[in-house]
Length: 294
Image 1: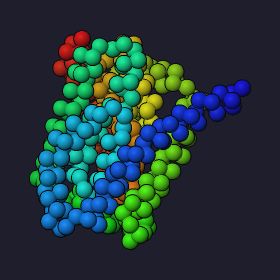
Image 2 (image 1 turned 120 degrees about the vertical axis):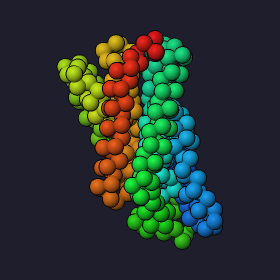
Image 3 (image 1 turned 180 degrees about the horizontal axis):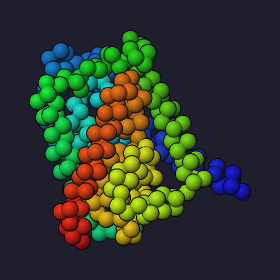
Image 4 (image 1 turned 45 degrees about the vertical axis):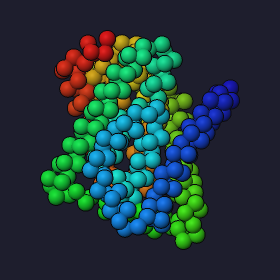
């Protein structure tokens, strides 16, 4: 009976999430291939220069429901197309499953708008801050150490066979990795249960922000679902909710670790995202953001 429920619930959900992600993956890799094969050196330089304003656009795009843009941005960052600040802006503003859950629970459009606005503003400001610090430390080239051609060589995609074929190769390669990982995570959640996550939140209220940030890092939509429901049920504060939602970027980090070989630098992105999300949530609680959301 349990096995039948597992096959009925876990597999369809995992496949559906995978299919929703595929178009974003394909478009991101297609863009990188076009830049590599079709763009002139002058056009490429323009893209890199425009990256200074990337956090502004990234913060706005990240607010689009689901985590597609976060997944796409990981590939673009690994290919050196966008800066670290732009990547952070997208990750922080990504809402994943927050909006569908709030809509399903009858939350007011004003509440959803305020939450999205705060996430976008924080994403943009902190994204610009990250890029500014990197330039100040003379590390502004860090985001472009991996260019598209280098990424292509790392994954042996046979780019000489054409842009579409190369982009499709990248998409299937990374997509399969995401599918298998998502299946493993959904299997774990099926047998452990979301109730275990709920009790974990409420049992350590003092460390709620830090815990919410950790839960948000889980590369699965279940994290944003649990955090959003806990807030709507009044079990966690607004700042705690933001800590979890700001660090939650769906499979964005998962794809980053898969496409970019430098584990140390990938880990630094993860730690930076976690610290920014948790500290922002603590600060928002101190500013009584819950009153603003009412």
